[in-house]
Length: 202
Image (cartoon, rainbow, N blue to C red):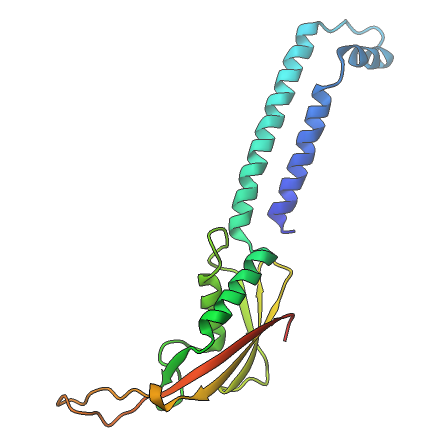
């Protein structure tokens, strides 16, 4: 549970205490007060009515604030269900994904597998999931052809290992037209990736 969630729990506990105080009978309060200070003046019934109204009002406001804050907390952190759904949808979306690389072997439309997976997970996060907080960590032994990436998110206890395997796809090669409009001399090599995910860190 994050700090905002802990604050919500504390707020609800305080509201429960206030409600319990509002339910204490006037005779019990008078007896307790008399045992501490027998010479004190008797409290009128109107004082107890005002006190109950104040306690109930403060408790009601506290409950309302806590409920609103819970909604904010849900939109600023991930839970296991949101991350699980997003990761599996991202895996399905990326399995068979095709792309081209430049002469140095760098993909043209994304920086690396980690950023590609992260963007897809965030994209499939759903309405209540935040647009940030996803971390995709590559393994030390990753290569351009074979990579294992650990996917985690702020607020979620679950983690996933996404395996990305690249294969050459000549039919996806792209040759842009030349300056004169004919066939160009530069060809961008095409690739496809197979993606699979299992629960737990890589």
